[in-house]
Structure formats: C-alpha cells, structure tokens
Image (tube, rainbow, N blue to C red; front, side):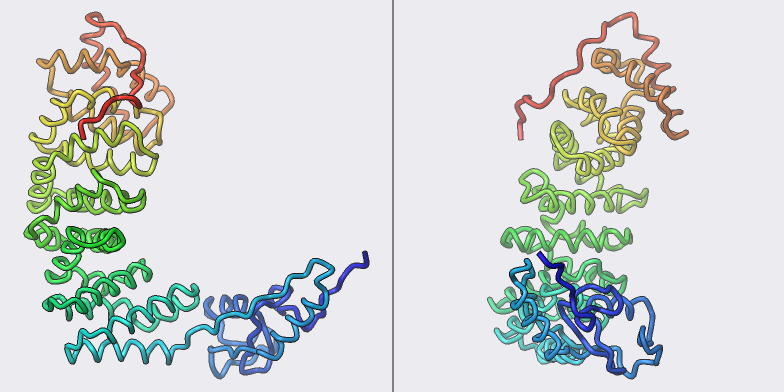
Length: 418
C-alpha cells in the first residue's frame, strides 16, 4: 500500500503532528490547541513562527481548518486514518467571570434557590470537561469565590441550600489542589461545621468530597483549626468511621492524612486530638488495618500510630492489644523505608524502659524482632532509626536465652473484632 503523507498545512508547526483542535493566533498562524496553550503557559507571549508579540493570549478556534482535516480523514479511512472528533469549545475567561459573578450575586442576595445550584452544577460540569477549563477557572479565582460562597449558605436549612452546598463542595474538590487563601477561607468555623455535617449525614459522594477538603485544610497544620474541629460534635468520630467502614482507598487515605495532620505536632490542641482519637479506639483500629493493606495506607497508618504512641494512654492501648507487636515486626523491611522507620519508632516507644514487661519483650523475640532489627542495621537505615534499633537490640539481647524464635505469623486469616 502506498505511504500516505499528511498535508503540511494540517500539521501543527510545534508538534508536527496532525492537528485535532486547530486554533489561530492573532498573528494568523494556526496551531493545535494543546501545543500552543502549553507554549503560552510556559510564559511565552509571542507567536512561535512569526516571533511577533500576541495581541491576545486567547486563541480562536479555526473551524474551517478543522472541517478540512475531518474531510481528509474520512477520505483516507482506507489507510487506517480515524476522523478527528469535533472538540468542545473551551470556556473563556469572560464566560468564567460571568458565571462566578452570578453565583456571587446569589450569595450576596441570599438567594439559595434552585438557580444558584444549577449555576454551580454548570460550573462543575465545565471544569470536568477539560484540564484547560479547570486552569481557566482556577486563574479567575473560582476556588476563593466558592470557598466564600460556602459560608454564605451554611446558616440556611432549606433543601435547596443543602443541595447547593453539596454542589459547591463537589466543585471545590475538582479544583484541588486549592491555593492557601481558599483553604484559609474553608477553615472557618461555619465551613468546618458544614463539612462535618456532610461527613455524618451526607451521601457517599458528599462524605468523600468533604474529607478531601478537610485534608487540604488540616495540611496547613494551624493549631486553631484543630481546636475548631475538636469542638464540633461527631467530627473525629466521622473521620474514624471512614477508616472503619471505608468507602474507597482514596477516601481512606484522605481520612488518614487528615488525622495525621491533627496529631502531628506537640501543641496542646494536638495532644487533645491524640487523646480523643485514642479514646475512640483508633489505636486498635489502625493495628487491625495494618494486617492487610496497601503500601500507601500502611505508611499513613504507621505514621499516625507513631504519633498516638507519644502519649501514655496510646502506648498502654497498643501494649494491651495482642496484634500490636506481631504486626509491627511483620512490617519491618517489608513495605518501604518509611514504614520501617515508623515501625522501629513505635517499637522503641513501646519497649524501651519496659524491662519489667518480660511478656512483651518475649513476644517480640518470638516473632523475630531481634533478627529483623539486626538485618535492618546491616542493610542500612537512617541515623535516628539505627540508634533506636540498636537500643532495642541491646534490650532484646538480655532476654534472648529465655525464648525461641518461632516462624513469622500469617496475619491475613486472623478474625477481626471490628
């Protein structure tokens, strides 16, 4: 079969590929949309071919060229050429501004009607159409505007207001990651109450979207936000429930990260959060989760456990739970360097200073703690982890003659109490 040549004027001057969405700049030169938008996003304000300064950075769809390319594709389908689809027209800055102003107007007039919900739905659908649309909404301050609008409806109670807030939270999730100003607005008392309400009473999608936003807010690790969240009735319970009754892996990870940021520092509010999570049975739940979970979840669970074991009550709950030591030893050198680091840290907090707790030390020896820690030092690890592993080895060595190491436990088939 004769080799088919693509007409040169159908090729993008940048990518040299057949154009699927031809657009023309103010200089009159036509490019494929993806290629020229990438060029402009990289800070260029000139035409790649003519080098002339562009009068506008908004390219115009070249419908004539696109139809010619489609006709050429159809005429040459015997060569295996597929017809390029007619692309959706991307949103413009003026359209975005218009929609945002309408939504903002509904907020100022306190009109949480069905029309405001439809506006947010329209906006959300436009954002989902393409990455280009999302960038356009982000550049025009959609995150900040929606975050502010959420506060506007939190004091209302009609069906339309609740549905509007649900749509706003969904739209904000699509805009992730949010800028710091948007996250700061979302961290207000009323917005936090709104998201916790959806975590407790909303649909699966609403709970999922709410925890995604909470993760973004708590990532800022501002003490007063943790304090606000602690005051909300059922807030911590809702986060724990997402781990106990998972919706999907991404939701579980978001809940774990939210909790991690809440217990991460040594501030008083973080101490209170640790205490409340321990009282809710999170230590035992996390250890149960470790029995069989993927790498990413395992690392996050161990990170939280390491923080919870900073408290005396957290260590007590971990020590009294039968699976703690076997599971932690099982994770050494099996998941990742980070997981190993967290596991050693937890073991160190549980065992060091516990010479009187011979039962716990013997249990660690029985499941191969000495061999695993010795191997860890031989293969190499961070200085802090190495120091803790050495201390643990010295402690375990004092009791090695009292017990024999048994085969590593198979934890997958253990019956869970949760």
